[in-house]
Length: 219
Image 1: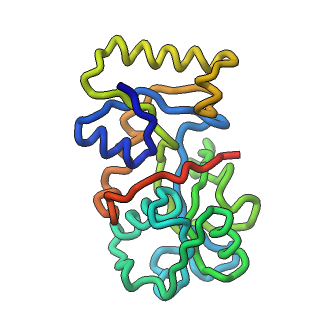
Image 2: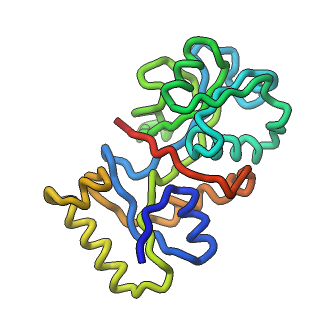
Image 3: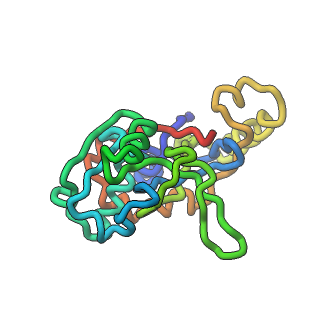
């Protein structure tokens, strides 16, 4: 009846009519994150047109935020990723990618970023990212991406879906095992834009059958 899904699996399941998203966990005040291709603040690599011949660091070939989504974005912008990078390394964690970029071992890397909108300018700035407090420049960014999705089978009665969302919402107001299991401070009903923003760039997703999510911590 229910599944706890990483974002790309949730997108595939809902797109194929197998499931309906009914709730998103909220952690540290946010229910979504973005993925970024970043470099050092003093790097000469500023935009995607500067990527030819650079060395790239990735988390894992199956990582949502550390490989797949940002590469799908770059491919959707016309980059040939078979020839763009002079070297590519898979380092296994967001911390390792950040360390490689900041030390100069790699020129660019991919990791998660939580963005806060600036109401005065309309721009967004990082509130938390895989590179921590290091000074970084974001070359390209894709999102918003739901960190994970609680989904129900498509034919589950609507009253049951509403009851589940109501139970999840109430659990966040007390010391409840459900809240502890999800590590969530609250739950929100998903809006269409939570998944629809990914549709176009995911048409360029590579190795679609081997997707998992490295769910990032916003702490």
